[in-house]
Length: 423
Image 1 (cartoon, helix red, strand yellow):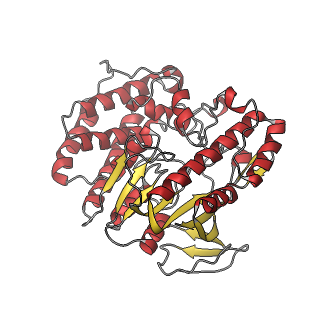
Image 2 (tube, rainbow, N blue to C red):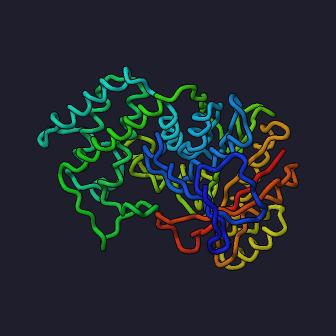
Image 3 (cartoon, rainbow, N blue to C red):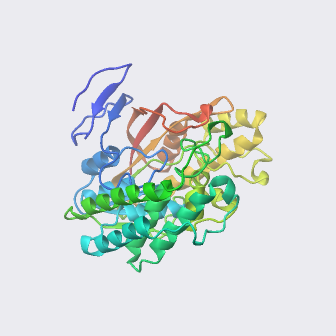
């Protein structure tokens, strides 16, 4: 580990030592080289936190066999790290596609189960494709806008080839996720834009055969990653809950969790269903309007008019002052902000319920601006956490190194605030 001051921050090389001393209020820049370790990179997912964060907190605050919870699991970074450290873990996410990624990412598959179907599939893709045959394309809107006709044909062939293999569910899902990982890349959508869209001034040139080639490359990468995961002894069990929600942790008993670690959605920042809409169309998680899916998400901008016609307070004095300022210029944005905080308060209630006494909840969250008003999420969450019985043990700032994603300017964040709350 190296440490040096740079622009009022300490630069820390990962992995972070267990005994690293946290200075309250300090700003750190954590430099990780583990984002592509094992199965962490088998599918792109926006705004993932570096694996070193959950790994550090799990080593610091738990022991082998303990239970770790991530109530906003996303693609399962916390759960994979907990498994690698031989801890049990529980993953919760309202988004079915996120649960699909996380489940595959944390499931080891033996070579005996995996390698024969893999070889058969590669052979099918390399030798069996015919431009003159028809292959079934899932029904979803604006297909010809999103994909060139030859790419629709190639993706349909890949999907049919996977589904006709007759392999186990775990292997089939890994292969389908490998296809999903290249869908946006071979589409007409801008590859670096979070809100899946077509930039007519930056058209892509996706040639015939590219979907087949990219799929085989991604498939081989993912198979090697799963083989590496399977080679690790004493992995901890991972339980991904289908019917739970960060606001209502159904199936998680009172006082049963040794540590919770999460990076929840930011207010106004990422529209996850729209980010993954093409992937979800191909895998059957959606086939038309995304409105119903969006409404379920914490931080969603899809809020019904009845919710924001009048001012909705949260009970947090500092937050309500800011929300009132927003309301005076944009009542819809004010409603989105208040709903977001109330959802996050519900998560704090539930996480407090399931944590053991003396255990910690680590939250990594960013502030942003709404209609020019600074919305200090960490401060409002700390207020409510202390109100219900949490102690703020530490709070520090983690710099964000790069923005690889195109996020609206006013929603961009340069820092994450890390709260360590103790029950």
